[in-house]
Image 1 (cartoon, rainbow, N blue to C red):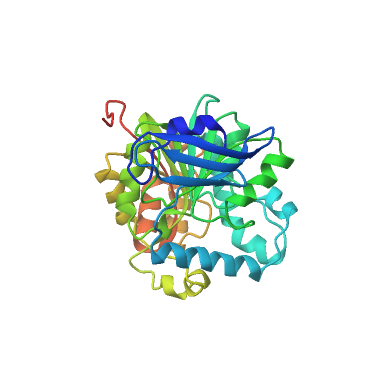
Image 2: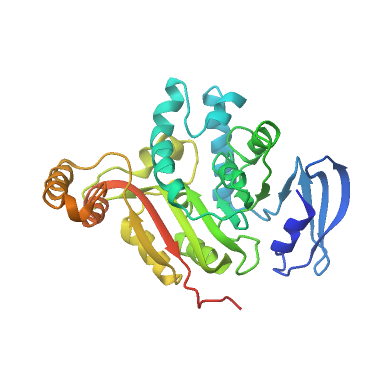
Length: 327
């Protein structure tokens, strides 16, 4: 942790911008590795360990179960530093299948994010920090946030990228429903396959809107959507059975939450399975209107129909209006 990240933070106990370093036990060339942060207003103490500032206070049973569940799943497969460095392009039979969709959609969306080296970026649900480090490579002041610490599933994985790819980004341990950052802080907030782990997505959307600067962007990718004709249940997934907080939300749940938070959204195509009727109609429309549609992968109305009726992956950009300033 670098000292200047405190300029972005709020005390999670009293919500005041009054955090200061009270102890540095060990510091290397990159950051403070071990120490303590104290709130000068309420005197709460927070630990810095392995460069990660832990601001997760009073975690509920859902968070504790999620932490335990991911630890169980991490031990179920072989993880290595080399695999982490390859993400999202995983290798090995047990990894490739699970990561292919994430890699394809990240590769589709990341290049069209308008990133400036001066941007402040928050990656919510950063987990292994595989996506966090791509923003850091663009020169952004980047922060990865997650409830998980365990190496190969949580924030401790960040050390692999910092040490072997010569990048730096902050890691903060906190929940996504109570994020300890100040209002109007970030130019970009990013989430990949994360939002459905919250039981309160409308609260998360309000937190995102609060922390975005006016004109800032929220980028949501790889988010599973349940259609009205889809009979799959979250309880059938191995993650749910391991104790992880899994939900299958409908498209309207996501869009209503963003709209109520004052964000203006635009849905993008995703790479993955589309229902047969959607594929047939899309092929016909693209052929007939090729000159007008240009390089459009999927006719936009069909993306909505796919997500509403069947199932799919939600990729979207949302913007906080330029005139909306949190005071």
